Length: 365
Image (cartoon, rainbow, N blue to C red; front, side):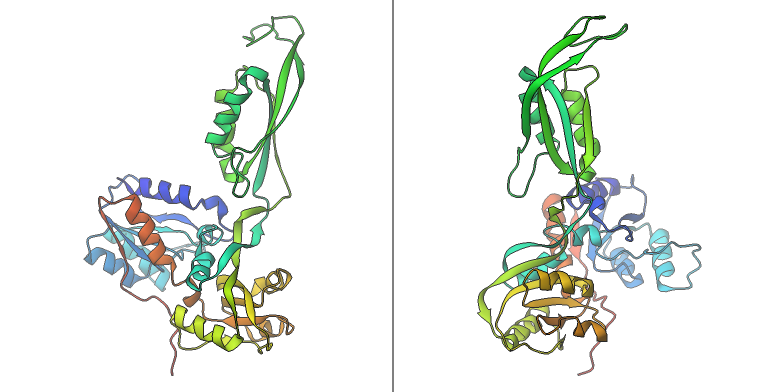
């Protein structure tokens, strides 16, 4: 099992195509062909984390935050980022980062926190735009079933909790095979009219190559006619933040106590209480002040996130309770989740959760 194999699995499970354009995800350093001795799962790939991996005989680190976020123009050890990368390279430790590829996954950082708080009926708070594509092609009636099955196997035709979704219209197509053609039906030099089924399927953008290949391989025509186009529909299963409901309403003070306990934080910052029960909760792990309007529009009583600034607390307009529980605290369940996934998939070598705490924020009580 190589580092490249682990990277490929993570990219299938949490596609890099889900990540935000500003982000830096994937294999940040390391040689893909090197055999994996073991994986350390950590929040951040700091020097201390690289040391921990080396001490435990592990040569790959899977992190949530990317240690390399902006472009590096030199490696001289002048800051913690360069020192961490240099040490990883010297010690032969690969680093793979997930960040917003995991944020935008339906089971990502916000959903993990939402479940820990006991929220149910979860859905994505801000669905991602420009993610859905539609393929339309035309195939002889007798071959339509086989073509659809091939497209479904490639990941097309999934809408929410339904798969094998397609739309089909029967009609006919015309074409004339020219010299050198090897037509499935029809004769060279003669216009042919063929009863065909127009097959339409939807799929996420990152599967475009796989879906197109599946269509070509399953299509009987030498030159299949097809279109792939973008749709303005948002993908309901991909996006930032999670919206959910408490099993029973809580008053605001009780909910704040629950948040402190679950996130293991000594202090919370919050806006003025509304004096109303908390039922519907929006969660955005990390920095989520940008989601205030979306949470209000979704009817949330609370937005739980981190990194709010002074003026952000005014933006709730008294309609929603804004809670800043801390950046690290609202992402704290990521490493355990990733450790569990990797351990189940790769039981033949060690996958361990880092024992270190990379949270740079301390509280004086």
